[in-house]
Image (tube, rainbow, N blue to C red; front, side, top):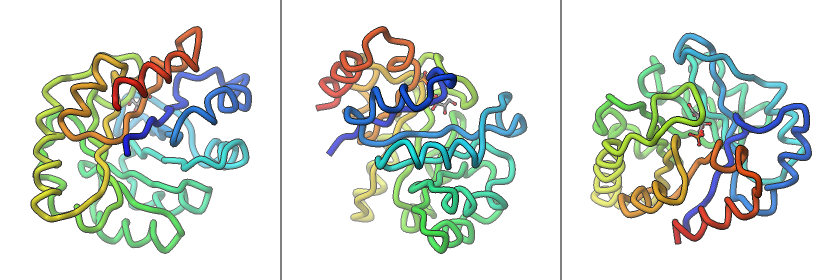
Length: 216
Ligand code: DX5
């Protein structure tokens, strides 16, 4: 079952409750981009936004940790209310330990990789996580164009999961809109994160309907 994940990075934070309320019935999950200015060249938000989002929606929340020290903070994002806590394979010193800590805190772990990181970098963790996030842009900013070379990474992970008989979703994030979501779905993605295509549109319902149509 394919799912749409609204990334709140591009929404109007002076009206967060209204923005979330406007799409809550239309999307399958929300993603919260956590950036520390070290792992990525941007700063965003932390625990207070996760706690606020937890009061605004019952939909699953993803905390996407684009931070240099995910091992130290990951479990705390589950405690703050995130259902999924996603750590970057390039940043974690001890992913398996951190996955256990996320689960102990009531969350579900995910592993993410950036452009330039080979698919094989996450193969050892596919048994330990509940989702894999393939970044289709260099993480750090919304509104970028999808890097089509990342679809080959999606295919390699899809094939590895099939070989292992492991049924967990592959998520793509960055530059997702109908014309890019369709080939990503063909490559094996099942979750589609979208920020600017939704929150910079004049008609959220129409934008999400077009996205959903493209991934069916
Ligand atoms: C970028 C973030 C994405 C971003 C997606 O590093 O991880 O979640 O919000 O935004 P769009 O859909 O605009 O590329």
